[in-house]
Amino acid sequence: MRYREAAVTITDDTAWAAVMRRDRTYDGRFVTGVLTTGIYCRPSCAARHPDRGNVRFFTDCAAARAAGLRACKRCLPDDVGRDEAAVLAAIDEIRNAQDVPSLAVLAELTGYSPTHFQRIFKRAIGLSPASYARALREERARNSLSAGESVTGAIYEAGYGSASRFYENTKGRLGMTASAWANGGAGVTINWAVVETSMGPMLVAATQKGVCRLSFGEDESELARRFPKAELVEGGDGFAKLLAEVVASVEAPGDFSHIPLDVKGTAFQEACWDALRAIPPGETRTYSEIAAAAGNAKAVRAAGSANARNNVAVLIPCHRVVRKGGDLGGYAYGPDIKRELLKRERR
Ligand SMILES: [Zn+2]
Image (cartoon, rainbow, N blue to C red; front, side, top):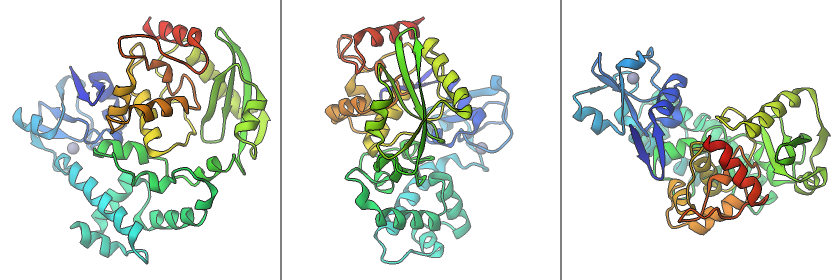
């Protein structure tokens, strides 16, 4: 069974893997029904995992209820939408208030108890409301760094229709390193290497956080052009293991979602990159489908530009985007590499 989520589908295997990880980014995208107990849960429910054989996935709470299941009292799956609205309302309040609103004020605004509200906010954003407010202030202070979209501004941008998309795009992204990205890599050490692959020389570069550039036919000079203020270090002990994983995933494509990335774009670009990463290996999508999956079906050209601005080839699989009608379409590193990547993934 497959669940439609804009242009991207979630398979049972993906759903089960998300349940096993208690992955909150999947909350709101499906619910887990447990036939033996008669309840349904968020994917992230903290309760003990049911046996796989007793589980059925439903696209939403209504479908689970229609099958005769009741909501879990522990994870309250029916509240996903309400939680999202509360968090968005609080963000709005924090962004627009003159002084930082207290937790009590935010709780009152959203109708939750302070402790409960603190918990759902932290679950969604990864920071407490107070830390978020602090990060926002700091970011505003250094906003002159970049003409680009700011991190905290990004989650505020329109087009974030669903809770899941909102969670996906904020999770782990409120790190303070965004300013380094905006500022040519100032203060950041980037380890890099050029390795020979079956598709020609490949440049891999990574910060402490993850891969920040993967490209074909480039060398250190291109890296220096993109990150003029970063310290560029060829090789490195910690880097070698990551490099090996990256090379393996290019030579024998499979699931490489575990490889950490350090990328930064506008909210819409990042939503497009997430949509690219959600395309199963061996499948392709059109720009319109990526735009729809990123939350704005009309932004087809912007989706194309997000594709072009992808810094991390292969791992953000922009090669899986083709023209309507099946024509291969363009690729930054030429059609041969694109064709070869797709061919390997279809095996
Ligand atoms: Zn539950």
